[in-house]
Image (cartoon, rainbow, N blue to C red; front, side, top):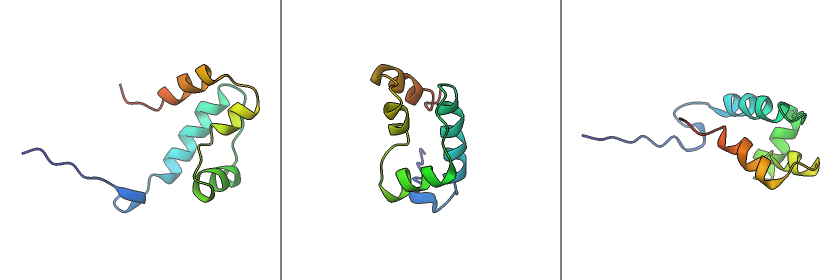
Length: 74
């Protein structure tokens, strides 16, 4: 039997801190710092991706796509 558990908004597992650290590490590779306050404002309050910080610094859409794909599991 195949079972899928969907963890909506950290109900089962609190992954927000892990996602923040992963985002920080990935954006750091292209020289874009992300603070916890920025992450909260952009991701949690505005519901946007913190990758907007990369776009604001002139990182191309293709490069941002490559960065996003680094979140994918192999």
